[in-house]
Amino acid sequence: MKICTYNVNSIRVRKDLIGEWLSHRNQDVDVFCFQELKTVAENFPFEEFEKMGYACEVFGQKAYNGVAICSRFPMEETQKGFGDAQWDEQRRFIATKIRGIDIINIYAPHGGLRGEKKYAYKQGWYAKLISFLDVSFSPKDPLLIVGDLNVARADQDVFDPSALEGAIGTLPEERKVFHDLLDWGLTDIFRNLYPERSQFTWWDYIGGAIWKNEGMRIDYVLCTESLIDQIKDVEVDLWPRRRRTPKPSDHAPVIVTATF
Image 1 (cartoon, rainbow, N blue to C red):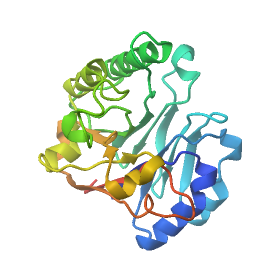
Image 2 (image 1 turned 45 degrees about the vertical axis):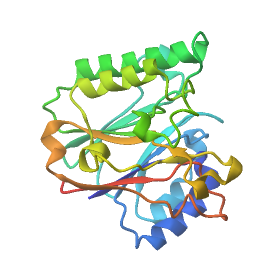
Image 3 (image 1 turned 135 degrees about the vertical axis):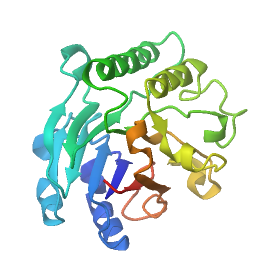
């Protein structure tokens, strides 16, 4: 099975690019976990994905946020949101079960600088996610968490730690809550497989950053211990990020290959 996490930065703008990319990859993606849909469910391009063989579950929001899971395999026990009105006003969480594996797709808040409301919201959102895991799962469960976590885990995950020191996504408090999530019982699969590799997943549109490789690694695949041996590889596919037309997202898709 191949599972892809992809911040599309508008699913309606990116649907043609996704189709071209799938053709380029010989249709090898089984499950898509999309973030930043920027549309309500009613306007999601269900028909286009159905033609490609996917059924989709969508938790959308007008103009902002939004997450979806599109799968060629049956989905069971789909949950849209935490089930908490305070934290579900922003559509950032969707979960389902595929072939016995619980998959959570998340779009973490971007955050803000210290003292800003968005900074506090991001810290609180991470605390809510961890408390949700405490109630709903055990680290022994077969659980996969994917998505745009909006944190560069370490200096290794940014192109220039000095230039980005104090920037949103690199703050020590953000990295701490990210590591609190890992400490719950999750492994960062890419870093587990490739401890020394510098690999980014997001590049600013400005200044040709993708061609200079001036990026950050903020999109992740995390899993519990019971799944580690079943995950064979994780790759970042730069093909759709390097397109000029259709216009790309500022993120590249991350694909995990597993024997689920």
